[in-house]
Length: 155
Image (cartoon, rainbow, N blue to C red; front, side, top):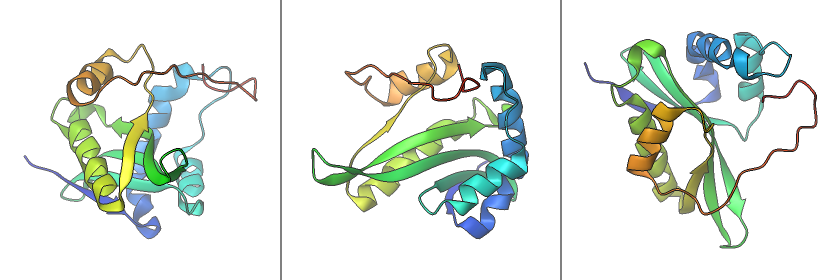
């Protein structure tokens, strides 16, 4: 079966609730002591932030995956860039091209907006994601660091 990707306006973010619940459950082991937010809490945070954008993947009315991203100033180029913050595909839809379609959708958005590039980070332990990203993108020539400001931040 085929699927489509589409940019979701804030009033349609509720379509992600089942995915947000599954995403929270999968991320729980990576949190340092805190429980993940509930799906309604995640939804409210995304919907209430005008900078947060969601590209969803759907088969009919069924949400298969999402990419949560930001359109940011890239000052060194005096242009804009895309920053992918979260990419999630429900377990039953994995290995069907959904993640790649979401990246391709972000690429199309980036071209239309004149982005200099799209960037994202991925945990070094996520070998399936890394295998995809190694096929479709170039490894960035920089390291990623995190300064945790909360003791219950993700590991």
